[in-house]
Image: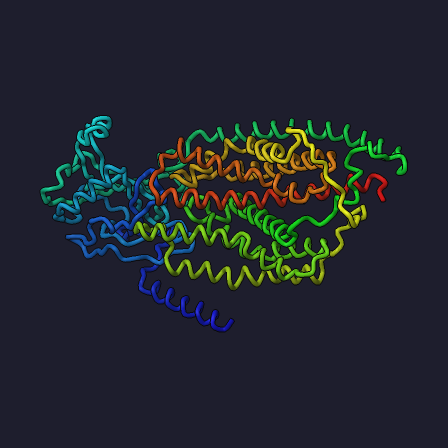
Length: 608
């Protein structure tokens, strides 16, 4: 153990030493005076359709020094956890800009480009590369260039007809100011100053320049992000679509629940009347129904350690999701800063590890288990292990491509330290608390027989396990599939998702619908005298995770425009993780509600 502590300490020392050479972060909300320096921070360059495929800004031959001012570029900035996890690598730029000082035209630098540099820029423009810059926390975007008179059909057939490739070396910065603060920031490329780089065989000297325009705005600093609502890089304007989709989902949920309640009340009422009126000795072999398996329904399921760990991890993920949505809804976590939600989720999951350890260990003891420590170990690995595998693969692919989407060493050390020093001890603490204080009695209303009852083998097609699994995943999916498009567009695109009120409602509806459907299917399973309902309840509840992963393929092919091995590795890898998290989360919800339902119906009838 001491050797591990020494290793982590050495890694932390090296990571802190590496970050010590970096510039301090530029804070947001600074109070400026006239002619105070305003720092332009450059971040990344990458293809528009592949948001994950990002590269350092200065991996391209841009100006690192100002010809007329003492401004240096390519100096790295210290970063927060959220920025590193989002793939940001912020660096200084040589742009000399002062608060309130308009600049009509200023030369940044003159650079002579060889054939290789021109070819790099031309290929980037042909693949719709764009750059990302920041002023404080306000992002600015622009394309490197454009292609005119491009004939795509002729280009695909003959390889010619690519049109004229133009580079945009002139940037127009537009800033809004109010009471000494910067409240808006945009950058535009000047088409009139574009440079033709179609022929890359001839070296060319290119003059990079910029202009600055400052305007007074009534926009308050706290509302600065609203200026991005109509941007093509931000969320769509038709926000009412979100509310219409959620209202439609609410109507479907209400109708579904009303239908289930009416049917269940009638069926259960008839069942209770039938079973209460029949004497025990009059039930012969011709009698059928869920009462006949009362001695088997609370029998311990197969692989109890894995089952308890799955329920505990799913409950932990559900609590994490609820807390993150609540923090985003109340504004305690910024929803407009990319990476904030992800960093919040990582930290919240780590801190709620005590919940996963407690729930899994408690359920394991209620199943009369003895090796509770094994359950704690499986709980600590059940979700983080797949995440680690996908991360190792995606990070390796990003490093091989030279992309800044690969997490830096210091960030990996930070996340690993959170897992080793916080997540593992808290999970163990939850297991210990469950061992000492939790109820170890399942409080089953019936006694379990020594010999399991035989399960009928002739099952109609509409009642078999696979039909139930399809129904259990499809119906909840219909309640959220409209909102999924916007969530995917935000996660794997350039939209800024801010409708967390709608998302919170969709989350609650999803849990309600999943629970209701799972309970219904468990009742039908018990009615055909199949007492293996534990795993069925969990799998049925989590089946929507498979539908979400299937939808991710549809989104990738028909809606995203993404391409390339790097983007596909990140997309399908992390979508598998999100789908697995949904499976665990809603599977635990379905099981919990099903357990209450099974206890209720068997407590209402007389059973031996």
